[in-house]
Image 1 (tube, rainbow, N blue to C red):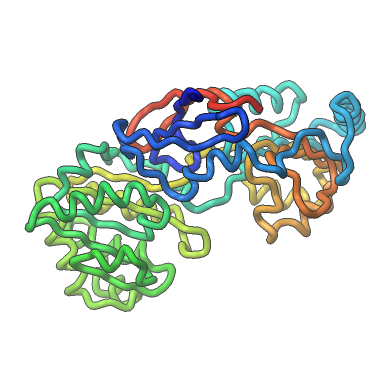
Image 2: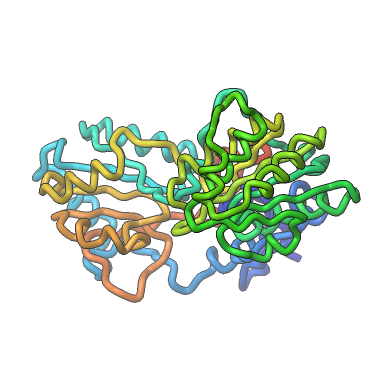
Length: 380
């Protein structure tokens, strides 16, 4: 019988425990029913762990313009490209899928080659959920379990299906429990709400600001104007504020999906403002919190358009092809070095280097609920 190797899923910040076994032929996901926070439950992403490890399209050798080359050839080519460019013509980009140690190595690499162009390439709006207003408490699992008033903005259940189980347990734990949902789309999550406030697309943060203004009149916000901009009745916002204020224990949770949020920073901060004024903890349900770089992606994009970047190193799981909107500009870069777990069906120009998946390397990191140490469950 094969042994079970345990780890913590890195596909989102819920930090679910899972196991992987190998019977000599294939890898299989094992469900650790006795371990918090998920008690064996996994979302579709977590269930794909064994598929990622054992995928037939795993990249095993470096590719140059789609053709296999040796590691020695790849390293020689990188050295040649590096020598042909000035330091200010080189950019180092990183995205999700890197451990804290690897992020440090990437920063050291940029410093070693003498470039200040260190850029975060994780462009998802949920990255702003990692910001914190002063005085806002981060929620823990006990806060969720004991909540009797929960306000969710965005599709939290869609982003974190396992966390949806915690929230629903709290919602049905007591007849006095109340769930408020603010969103522009009537998702499945809205069906569980006692109060669903459907706002105009992209105006969620205005509704949140209005709720905060009702909770604390000292903010002197024009609640009527904000309600009109959201396209909702002020009375609904007042009801949401009353629910959050009346319960001694509660939670404010936020999710920010790509294409659904007009201003992700205000989306995050206004949700936290509600938490602060209602004296409730906050949880930002995100896939990853990736630190800011020295140069913003917008500045990097302008440098490319101006022909100032000739060589780019792109580390992590989200290479530019994840964002087709930026591909036309990125194609102007003369030399490109990127990393990938998989071989693609189409030719990617430049040098593509194989790397281990999240399940094949050790590392430390944070989740919504705790610090974790991840152990590899397979060899790359």
